[in-house]
Length: 279
Ligand code: DGL
Image (cartoon, rainbow, N blue to C red):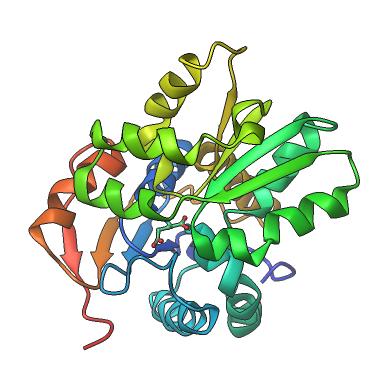
């Protein structure tokens, strides 16, 4: 795609975004704010969430099938808005999609951001078991050779607790346990390596506030990723200039809880539609 001449028709093709559930709506929201004229197709694989505890093979199989569906919808760019799927399946999805669309993940833009702003700093990182056990952030940060010291920890229950309770004070008890590692308590910045976590950002800041330490930088990937997508589209002359736009938010399993929580992740009311990908 990169070398093909761009046309308005190509640019008006949608951006496909997928996540294990509705956490990726935090990224979708940032993307829509950054690129308000783009057509968006969001797919949350609520039938299989959480991905964080699934095997890499299972996440790869789900991701390829979702990417195939997004390609059938003629997406020009597919964004894996889930750290667990970015860690386990990005390379495979990229290979599968080949030149039919641009494929992006939520990890590489954060690595670039760390490279630009955090040389020789101590960085904490929290995410799902799948993301942490993949060591993908560590590998990519070590490759930068910039003296960034990374301490990462799996915070397994957080994503499910957020899906279940939303931004509820019950989360504070989990944060107290999960963030008690000395290297997380003293880090210069904390990367939220799960697209569910931005909605509890204030709680995390409040937690650090109680520790009697200098303020910590919380690195929330949503806006960093949205800016990276914009840049990628610009580089490929694929920004949609056409005024017409549509947004669809699909989930593989529709429940009232997901429908009610969607607004919390997206920051405003949206309608979830059931897409029976696995039926
Ligand atoms: N939102 C997913 C991520 O960024 C995690 C949720 C899950 O485990 O499904 O990794």
